[in-house]
Length: 130
Image (cartoon, rainbow, N blue to C red; front, side):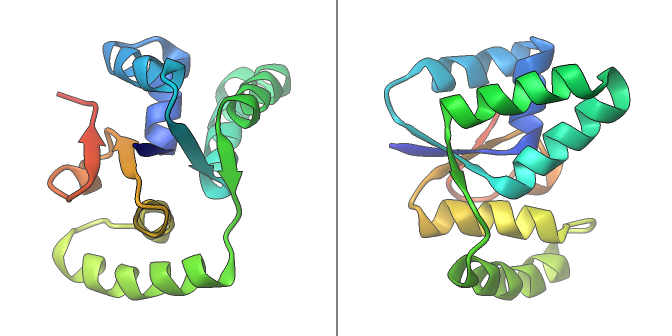
């Protein structure tokens, strides 16, 4: 099994919420964990704004040590663009970052771990929020 860890999941993990406990169990498991670099940027931005640079640096260092960072390459960008058109027709508020995350999961044959409502009823998603 492989897992793509979405920004939402990382933030819940860092906040220590009940949903974050689900993420913790996945992060501590032996399976491959993948983080798209867009998620690293989103977590850094949110933490920088709320808590400052020191914590943002520590969190992103942990993310890099705990998961494989996947950069947005040409294949993923094209897959995300195609996916984005379809998803925006059916899911209100779907964002391009969502497309990048979901396309990354598909291309790497991984389950996407998130609590983002946009992903709630999608295939190959572990939805961590009740």
